[in-house]
Amino acid sequence: MKKGFALLETIIVITFVTVSLLLLYGTFTSMIDNSRKNILYDDASNIYRMYYLKEYLELYDLQNYMDGVDIREITCEDFSTNSCSLLFDEFELEHLYLVKYGLKDYQESNYSSTFNQYLYSLSNESDYSYRLVGEFIIEDEYHYASIGVMKE
Amino acid sequence: MRKGFTILELLISIALISVVLLLLLRVMMALEVINHDTSYASDDEIARTEIIQNIESDFIRQHLNGLQIEKNNEQIVFYLDMDEDKQLIVSKNSITYDGEVFSIKSVNAQYGLCIDYTYTDLENDYYLINFTIPVYIDGENTTSRDDLIFTYMGLKNEYSSYPNEFVC
Image (tube, rainbow over all chains, first blue to last red; front, side):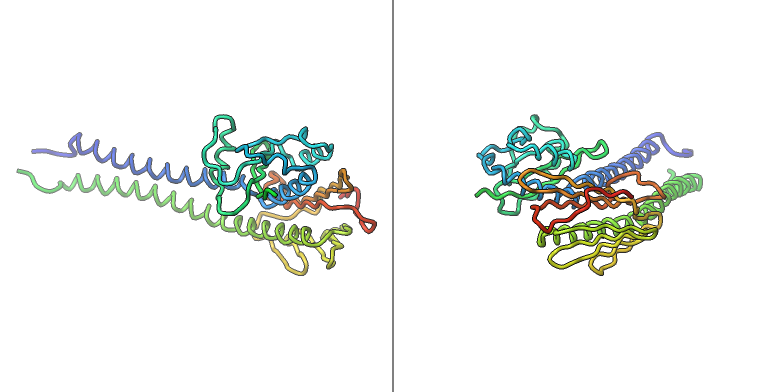
């Protein structure tokens, strides 16, 4: 007479329970990761910083850099004003990019993974020509914010 | 031929299922606590965004002609000289802007009354003002992520009057 579980039954149950737990763990981990990432994107104060930066750089021909290139990194050397560096320091800006609106395919390997993830998270439902994307380093973490720019 | 389960198999199955359910229950209870904390935190995060948006929208729509900051033991008051004069009053548990009160909901959080203020002259007669209202969690300002950071950039005129610095 057979008593207790067969090895096969035990293995099947353990596999089933393990797979269920792994699925649960994977779901929660990705939810937590996404919420952590979203905290770093488009903070209200960073968006307004980008607004003021855009307004100021437009005085110094920001429009000239919207020349059809998909992604262009903008540095203070591009502008004839010392105030640009002051603004970068005050705003804790590490990098500034002009990115074509609605951009989908580009050479991702040229940019950091955090920058690529941010670009993927953006919607492209407005009619801007470009967006000015700021990469901030705040407390050793990369934060991103952007604002639309219309080509005149 | 044997059919069905033995009593031992049933008992072991019930015991195993109970253990798994207990573990799940513990996870769910932990998540409930996290959700409770997070809902307060997200209420405060929404209020933070709303305050920043209200003030920054006014900064953009109306020129900031002047600013005065006064502090006493219980609150700090910003007198904002715009097209319509407005006040921003910060106390430990709430922020009042233009008569609208935003209370902090997280029990362990408080606004700090020692603000960080900077004034910077820029080229082309522009100037930049930055001020930060810190948020303390359990008495410590561990991250700037919760702080309320305000920026204003404008063109100077003869009526402009701002403090060059603020010592708290």
